[in-house]
Image (cartoon, rainbow, N blue to C red; front, side, top):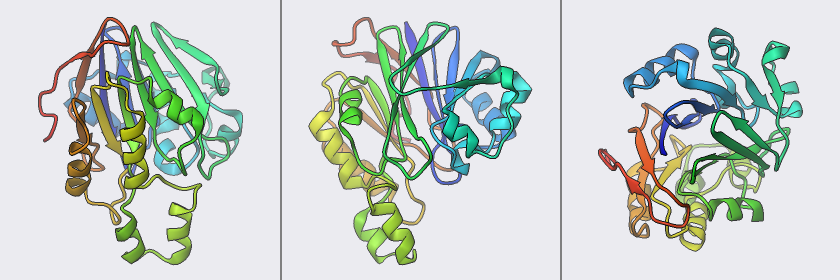
Length: 271
């Protein structure tokens, strides 16, 4: 079974990730407007009608900006934790609202989504592993630091969206006020390039075919430097930097069993 994945957008201006098979798809977070999400998906040749559910990681505006309009327009169910919803400030019709709980599988057609708690300064934040057939795709962003469960799930994924938010030196010497710098690097904010690289080098499975470096800071990171840093340690894993300005290429993963290296479409991987 082929699985298609793409970053629709990734950054503090909005986050949205697409994962689907031939029949159905899910969106993890919808931090862009409904109109912009539609536009970017159409540019990838993706139809909104194929999307069957939205999963929300936490309540920060760059993850929920388009939620109410997109869910209402396409009658999409929203999977979200109760505490996250209570802190969102958006209204979703009750018949489209479903509570997620950590370590509980949710099935959307032939796709299985597993949520687990993550470390971030939000009410009840979650990361997700999306499984379609034998293929697992992780969405691991907005991480204060890696926890044991994150490490475990990362080591099972064939592809992942992994936060690499900031370069430590750029953040230290940059224009942000100290309270914001300390929020970002204080263990509840975001994952640094060094932390992300350590996780990747130490826990990347041999069959991981693609890594999307995600949620980069506009002011405290350098996409070219970051991609080179990971490429030097990537082995057979294709490394992409998810943009805050445009959708990524649509990547197709094809595999039969999870312990074998996957055949992949790698066109435009480094554009």
